[in-house]
Length: 249
Length: 249
DNA sequence: AATGCCGAAATCGTATACAAAATTTGTGCA
DNA sequence: TGCACAAATTTTGTATACGATTTCGGCATT
Image 1 (cartoon, rainbow over the protein chains, first blue to last red):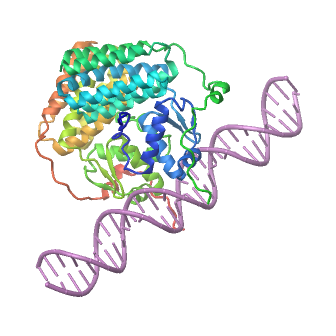
Image 2 (cartoon, each protein chain N blue to C red):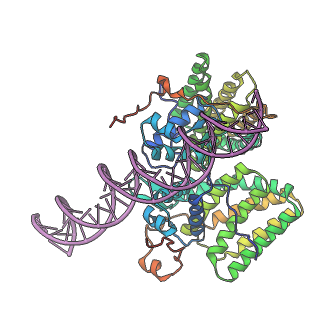
Image 3 (cartoon, helix red, strand yellow):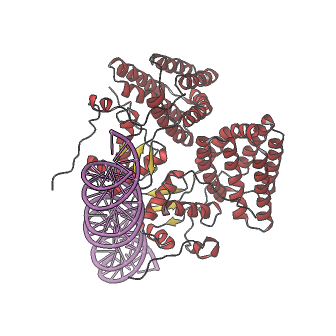
């Protein structure tokens, strides 16, 4: 299978380096729901996990904070963000404003090879869902949206959208209620067909209602408790993120 | 005069502290065109200017980089960003998408006291312009836009807009060509009248054409040359910020 | 048993030290 | 003079040290 997950780069305005790598790794883990909202990301722990000093870990955490994925509290540390209900609404309203426009632009500009790529992307989504890897499926359905922004060739809007989509993933982790995630890839399919026809109006409309669907699929009435039960945390072994690489000196 | 410039806070997702202060001071200086695009911001220089170590200066610069005001190149350092022509177009297109919507929301939600505040804001703009302090006038005309977003009470969009407006200031520093800056405050006045009538449609339309005006007031055909640095921006008392407290050990 | 206080441990904020990379300066040669 | 290349300087990248703040656990008190 092709590299279809890749390259949500370009955000995180850091110079290339280890901090950026750590950013991407942490982001990937959060987007796949391998690290839940609210979880503490201690500087030392992050540093040891990736074999760097606190300095670098700190840089990465601050970068993630600017993207909204992480919240830093003074003298307390960094935590995976827990968007409020209010913020959840705002994020999806913002997406509802931005994405239909992007979708329209993409429909006009898309090339054959980009259509191909989106097709493979959707296929990978299906594949992941069939395997039951919902974390990966969800992550892919997010990158699908940013991929469209890249096709529209709007760097500024792409970066904005990237942040919104990332936060959407947190919101979904906290508030998603609907078990029928299939509707998701249905919309994506419909969108792709509009793209193939270069039908800008259809693309815009489909995207608009797709965002509304996502928004209304959330249960935004009560905020979940701070900590998931201990049983939840220890029952799954999905938390096996990259092991410490630090050699015992 | 009231505090009308204030509080473009809330962005820069850093915990409160010296780094955040430095962020705001640097941002203010950049927005007032006291520091030109392209100017180098060396970590040591920033640190000594504000009386902190490189660590803190670095944090501030990275935060500014995430807002797009500063660009960091690996092993070379931080510079005030020089938006490309391409990015200039994208920024104003994004504002053209977002701000009319925000303006509409603000028109519906605005209160008497907020109207008052915007009035004072415009008055301060006039005042600054009359005094010939174009830097301050420009900065105020920027915060006017973010103030509207705050009235619309949309935190997510406000943060996005804040970044776009900041970058607009860089763009104007590089590409502005029109001498008649008066049209500016005219639009702002018209907007305020629509707000006073709670006329959402008018507010949206006025904002839309205001953004178009700004965009078309730029000379986006050729990128100006680099220009070298001059670092005594902070020597004047307007930025009489915390002096270096470092005792000679 | 519940509550409040206090010391120990953990964690963060900041400064500093040193290594690595880039920039500038200096020098020799054509 | 102009260019090429090497030394010296500057500047950044990263690690580590230490003080400050918070958190946690035990113990006394109610």
